[in-house]
Length: 221
Image (cartoon, rainbow, N blue to C red; front, side, top):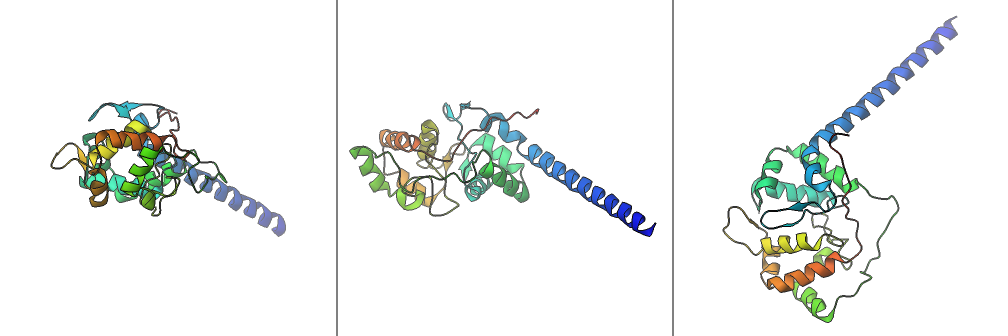
């Protein structure tokens, strides 16, 4: 009798534990869905275009480095990156929210065990090659532009070229309350180039294989 009661009690405890684990997992899933709800409307639609400060595709962020996403959101929150919509979204996020959102998008759409070559398969044209040397781009973003030397630097390979062009131009802007990015290193790099040269760089980097994706998401799912 005692043995039977012990077995029944053990089964009851196991059931309660399994139920509690499931509930916690569901709560975590619901929590992160709430946190990324504002992101999905732009970053969860393939080819979605922003219209400020000009028309361009919003960046692919699924598969982007976790620490870079966090650094970018923090920069918008501090006003170091000037974009009214992104500033408003970042202002609504706590530090923990930023950590959670960054971790979520870093893993979204990634295939376990997949890897990229250490060097870009596609060679740049002679002109673009000279521009890359002038900007010393691989010294921070890696030879394949997908493995930056510091996790707070972005992966660039395969990013939309029009977004890269707009982002690079933003580093050239000073003293504009609505547009611009304050970064001493990137400001110094970007200001060396004409817009035509920045567009050429963006076009080459966009053509490379990378981890970045736009993963379709439905906020009502």
